[in-house]
Amino acid sequence: MLMIAVYFLLYPYLLLTARKSAFYHLFVASIIALVWMLITNNQYGYNRDMLIIFGLNSFPLFAWASGLFAAYLIYSHWEYKFKFASPIKKMILFIAFYWPILISVETIAYHIFNIKNLSTAIYAGLPICDCVHAPLWMQISYLALGPLYFGICEIIGLENPHHIKKTR
Image (cartoon, rainbow, N blue to C red; front, side):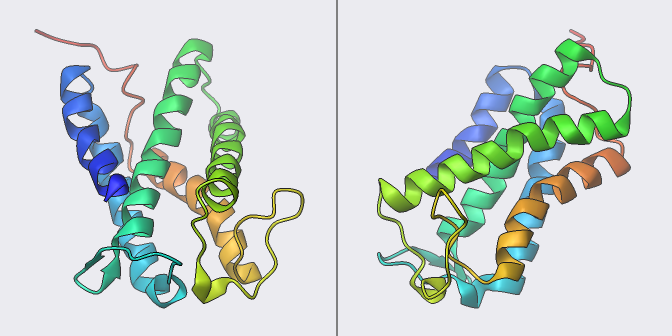
């Protein structure tokens, strides 16, 4: 339930901080999370009860949408400060935030909050952090979903919300 609350609190946050243009980024993150869950839903079965919505596990659905979007918000602040124009530099900057955030959140969820995905528990976790216990294709996908999301936002022309001039 916490992930659902976090996700839905993003909407008033964007309104109150005058970042309405970022709704598009949240929409793209939500679509990617939904597609990911449609593909991998049977790979998620946790050691605690999670709400199931239309047959989809709500925890990873809302965690992916919120996480992708949060990584973008953090990236967008720094990209605005440095004003990168090169798509490659922008992607590298996004990855520099996304991968550490992903690994940190996964490590904390697994080791501190004891959130374990029993459906993929037989697989080894990532080295050092011992998190993301899943098949190799899923581990690679975890690392690739962020750059995929960022690339889609760039390709469809979503601007950094910090670059958009506020009009009143």
